[in-house]
View 1 (tube, rainbow, N blue to C red):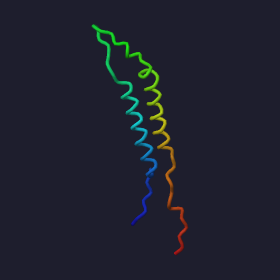
View 2 (cartoon, rainbow, N blue to C red):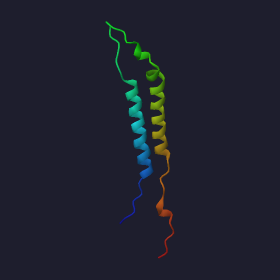
View 3 (cartoon, one colour):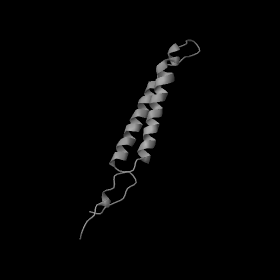
View 4 (tube, one colour):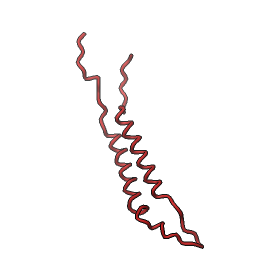
Length: 82
């Protein structure tokens, strides 16, 4: 079979998927009820929404950047004698 040189390896795709999952978790932590003109919901200023969720989302974006920069393992450097 022909050897193809892809920009991403298996480790890159796994790290990329993990980063996307972490970002989705961060956005889920930010979601919740909202305030209306008739009623005020104080949970919009909760620590989970203001501190924890943005940090989790930032970690997710940082892991995606790491997945892009991560150099894939190159198996073509093996010396083969013919």
